[in-house]
Image (cartoon, rainbow, N blue to C red; front, side, top):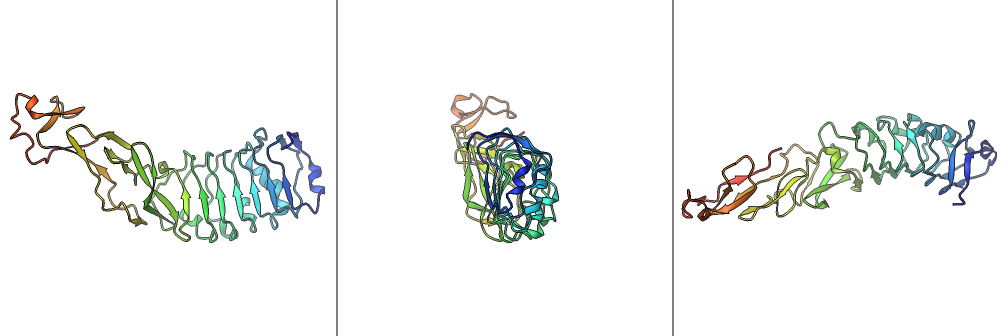
Amino acid sequence: SNKLNGSLPATLNKLQTLQVLDLSNNNFTGFAANLSFNSQLQILYLDRNIHLKIDGNTLLKALQPCFCSLRMLLARNCGLKGGLSSSLFNFHQVMYIDLSNNNLTSRILTNEAFNMVYLFYLAVASNNFTGELPMNFFPPLTSLKYLDVRQNRFLKSKGTFPNINMIVTYSVKIQRDTFSCPTVHLSNSGRRVEMDPGYYDYFLCSCTKGYYGYRRYCKPCMQGGSCKMKEATTNKTKTSSSSKQSEIKMNMNKGYWPCCGDFDNVTKLVKCTQQEMFDDEICNPSEDCKCWLQL
């Protein structure tokens, strides 16, 4: 945090016994062409070097000499861009990786993580990773306790969600203004996965009390109507999304009817006594009439 600038010099590799290197919160702009860190390095802080602007694989190449010693890599918000090769998983002693708030664009690698048995913290939030979290990514990561993949808008589930590596919990929810979503946890440890509901296209979300609709598309319940969610899944933990998504319909109360004749776009409910065609006694007497959202 000394506001140092310029490129990181290649002479850093001459510090042969250096184990902890904190370069965070400076103004570095790049790496020297032949920069490599020393083989004894265990902890590297590069976070908050917002002008660094280097390729993710350039960083991995510079770290290759310490693939047997590196324990922690903190490179949050330091201008990393481009892809990450499978060499990330050569660091078989690493326990903590934070690559959040960068512009990394590669897919989440699949079957290369078998060496990372000590990794317990992995944060890649606020990047541009693509594809999905593959099923065979998780089994080798036996120590993983924290995973953060939020704000990766191109990261989407393409198959069944959750898969065998994750469970969803309805007793603890992510609350939004008009809807809520269950939290996701790692099945092997029970620890929470920080994940945007957009990853599974809001399929497991439902409208909050006083709203009707489905997923994240929720409208306020109208005067003269009632919107109640079935309580069948609110406190359960699920490992599969095979059940039908939660849709809340608006029940029209007895003596109320849609206004004003256009049933394809109901904007309010009125008392039947206000419409000449109805008598309050025969208008929706059993409260079986419903409204729902169409997109």
